[in-house]
Length: 313
Image 1 (tube, one colour):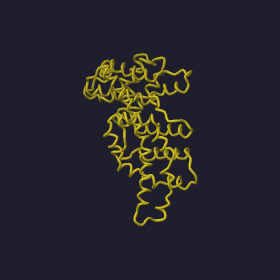
Image 2 (tube, helix red, strand yellow):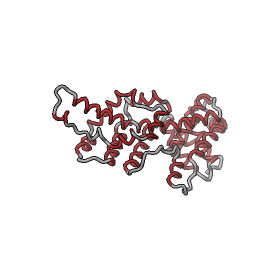
Image 3 (tube, helix red, strand yellow):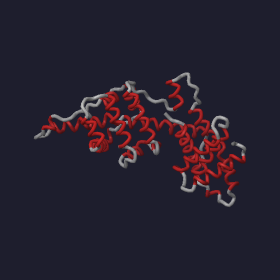
Image 4 (tube, helix red, strand yellow):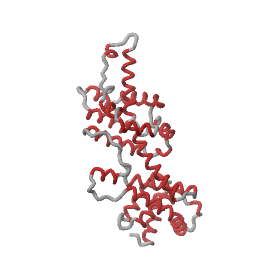
């Protein structure tokens, strides 16, 4: 599930927490990293589980319309295609999924207003109209519809953000990634495969499908990265200070130093496995999203010089 790009971000956030507080043991860093990684899969589970809730809302609307004092012909003979979609039934009846959701206490029940708003939004879209007008039903078509729902209804949804923050602050920034994996699961289900909980790391996912494959462990990579970045943070900090003697030490942003520490830890400790240029580009890219507007050029220049000064090319 988690690939190298997002794992680097998780490592950066762990080291950033240390950069801000100045207090974190290796065990604490390991625990923080583990929780952060697990949170992505929890978010995936939460978002995937919305399918039966939205479907139940559609059924409730149909039942309410039939119960009107003076129901119309459409109320009495509704198009129940969406309300009876096969995907919702599969997820709703999956014992493994339900056990995990129950154990983790992940439920949309407290957020019925949001569910109603999501269904209203879906009903107003062209993709829904075409789905409802297409004759016949199929699991493949249902999965295609909900793939579109995941792609269009939740990213940048202002009403969803506070819900996610209320459940877990660790879910910040991970929604798009989790939704992508929801779509992957729908592809598998549409192809006739039963739902399975994704392995936490992509390397494990590959090995599960192809045991003979030779892949490096993503879990080993990120835990070693955090361990080395934390152990070497003060060393990297002093090297950066020496490079910019005119700067006050306090002017070095914690986010910048966290990126630099992770980058140098990867470049120094994965030499021969990952080209230094690849690592540099990855962390400069991360700095675009998590550091100040001027940080990209600063971080790029510092890392370029540190790589050359330490013969790490």
